[in-house]
Length: 328
Image 1 (cartoon, rainbow, N blue to C red):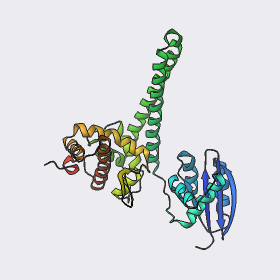
Image 2: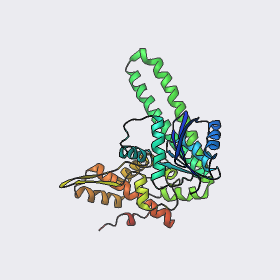
Image 3: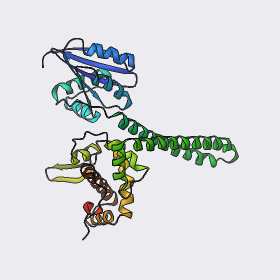
Image 4: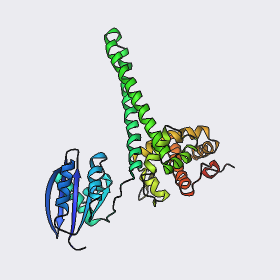
């Protein structure tokens, strides 16, 4: 590709450390991770060529805004990759140190040597749903921590009473924030036809209700529409990882190299379904009879549930337990 500019960016909360290659010549520059810094990056990225490819790691909110700015810039393609891929690539290159500049160079080399996969941002309503659901998770985690602190303060008797009162006030405030965010999630789903349809399909599954349904929905609707069922499983980190070397064969374990939000959201539905849905329970018992441990059986149910959801979305159908596991 003529006059191709390739750039690797190491992203953190404050800075964008960049390494650029043009006609085999590399230069480095650092920009603030702010809207003004993003504009300066765009000018630098497009100054010496007709086409620009930018590669960066997925670092959540820190990388999203700059990736979005570059995505909307004419002549610029963006690839947002899993940080583990970059880590493994650095290990393969025998990188012996770790600095922001070295990381930017590694990301650039990854972009040059590996297939370039363009990134496409999720739709606005999908992005908002995902952010809101992750916010619920943050608030729930903080509420649990505050309750633990309150329990500890209660053991201090009178000396801890002021602290207990303060913690209880904050717990009530967190609960109010959770309720407000939940209401916004409900409004968003009801206002978007596709989200509402998918949500109805999800909540037809035993074990998925108004708490876990939006969390699973937010992670799944953000995925590219052409992803296959097995790619969903790999994205969630639920793909089994074989370990064989000579005559040594270790039990398979899931890779956990994927979306932890989706993986965590599937655990409770799998647990509930294994107890309340007779078809899922029968599948669970079959796995136990084959020598699987309870946790292994639950992970297998999570993976099978995800495959079932993919098929439901593709065929626009509700939950059919017979298709999940046909009992004898």
